[in-house]
Image 1 (spheres, one colour):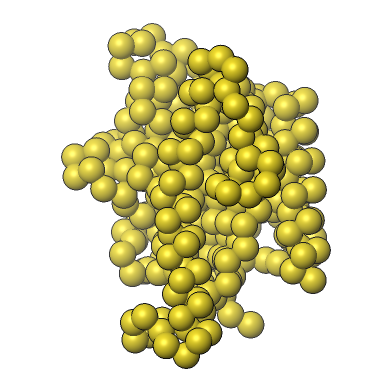
Image 2 (image 1 turned 120 degrees about the vertical axis):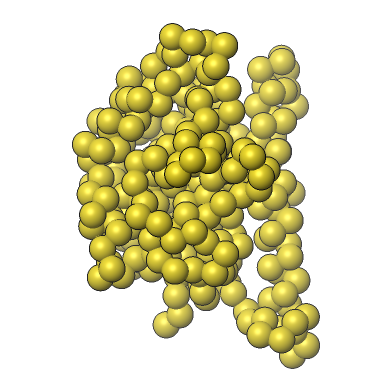
Length: 290
């Protein structure tokens, strides 16, 4: 059996959808060796890489509230919220020593955006091509979660970082570089071109939500189509480049947009609904795979 990679997108409180998908995958015996995440997806990925079960991750989310993640910043000209509560939550709940243990069988890759260089950076607890091998701590997860202006940029080893979603919200390439043979990507917005899709916006907030989701999906869609082209060429016996191999990629995504309000809100009713939706969508994908 080849290496399995789980790629988790960013989307704030909508990350509860990923928890439901993870529950369904783990229950079906689909356990990844490689965990890749951006923003809240990086937090979920780090928890799994630190040895959490799907049930423990679910229980964590059911107890998670907005005040555990952020509060209004006293200097709103710098950012709307401070991530100090999230830092405290990560330190309280995650075992970073276990996460970075050389004997840990799980590889973690966390995406952030380097402000000075204007490019994505991948932090990893392993030596992986095109990744920065580090002792992953709370600051690396905060860097991946630092939505521009919503949260302040996070300083890591002298450099400032923003949310990884600025460059790639669902980083397939990081999983490929880590040696994945099969990938499951969990999106927090409908897959472009699929049935259902987005309703026409009826007011400015809905229009903003549509623009945001489309922007976050654009890089993933390009990467996904490119991977499909590589796979097709390999299956036809004419790989585009030496060393190309087939990498199966399955996508779990909602049929309709998740509420924009859930990005900044963490409460029990909303979390329960998103977990149930993610689990149901994942079960449909698993059923189709047989």
